[in-house]
Length: 188
Image (cartoon, rainbow, N blue to C red; front, side, top):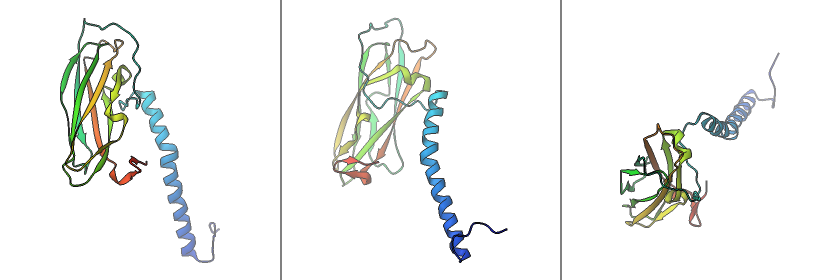
């Protein structure tokens, strides 16, 4: 019994079948795997994703009876030439208190560039209790050749943070989006 025939040339049939398989595999990755990954991360409480939108604070009192250590990490993705670092590597904050810090970026190249910072929080279950009211990660950062920028971060550690979490690490990875930019914003 012979297989499905699309043409009278076996080599053409094989090439068309392989092309169809490649298209199906590519579609599977983007249509099924990405949403499935996000659902699994949410269900299992892993990946430490933070919200990409500003948190609207509600009036609460500050819990002065405890302090939480917040660590800041800045990482450049492969090929990103910028210097990128936090002002403060570690802060001790009271839950409920609005707190701010700055990150700095320098574009040492001779070209204008656009970047995007992607945040992650560890431990991942602390992500639901770490609220950014202002963050440079909400927007793409355009930086001229040999320029420097100060990028603010304002946040609140929720008073409902479980008592067994004493340290939260907020990590940003900086990605170069320059090649994706059209009309000043990257298209993804």
